Length: 264
Image (cartoon, rainbow, N blue to C red):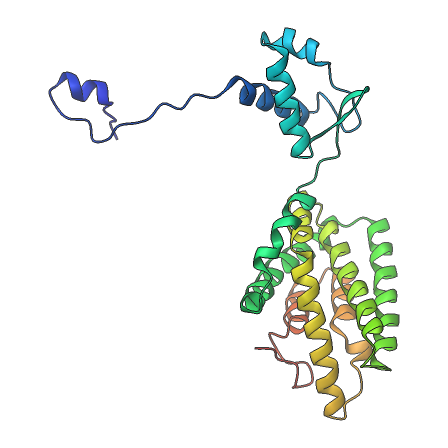
């Protein structure tokens, strides 16, 4: 494909197809971008103290005000922390806290299916990665999280009307899945999951409560060892990805467990 720029068209008497605006990047943005890139490249690591405003100004050949504004922007983003009388320090940056603030815009009943679909895609992918990437220490932590979940499940099923018991099992449920997310060793997956944690907690709460009451009303005992969390753990330990897909579908109510656990 041959590209003809607008200047060539003008010289040939043709009218340019469109006019392009030339955007100017401000000095502040350039300084900000340069510092961010150095942090991303590992020149300064979490906890490191950055050069002073005067040193940056000399390095970049700009005035101190431009540097000060650039540092303020980085501070607002949570990339650095500026301490009065001490200077600016690199933070252990994560998108999580920033993204969690905007999750409220997705918190509505209309988005229930969206949350379930997100969990289906994200959690299964992280489970699949955990099969090959999880360390022995992480597997031990997951086992501890599973034990806590099973204990909380037993407690809740003994008193389905207890809000405190429901809250505790939701915490344990989320903790189990968050452990799996971290076992993927994908920082972006972890941050995205953290971002929507309130939505996921709401989804977990609805599923646990609905599933438990349905089984109770039908005169069926709690799932116990057949609980999908136990299946997911076993699949990860055995590196059984095919069975993991089935367990994930059961966990999210995409396929029935004992015939009554499909969720629309």
